[in-house]
Amino acid sequence: MKKDIATLLGGFLTALLFFLGTIGVSFDWFTTESINAFILVVSAGTALVINLYAVWKNTYTSKKAQLQKKALQAQGLIKK
Image (cartoon, rainbow, N blue to C red; front, side, top):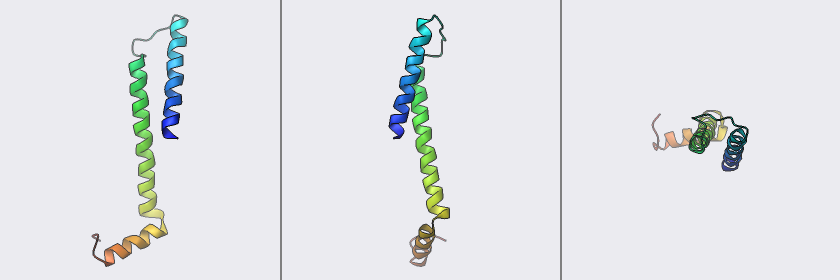
């Protein structure tokens, strides 16, 4: 899903680039390369946010994760 959203965003920005070029509006910084770089940053940022949320949820809010952590500490597999 994340890749699909990034692809749609890239397609929209590329279409916007071509539309603005057609009506004579141009920006030096708004190129295909800048769009690709922006999509890469958006994809990486999305992955980071999703992973940070998953780690936070599994570490601090999940009862199952808290029980698992206590069990691993009791076995000496992780530090307290």
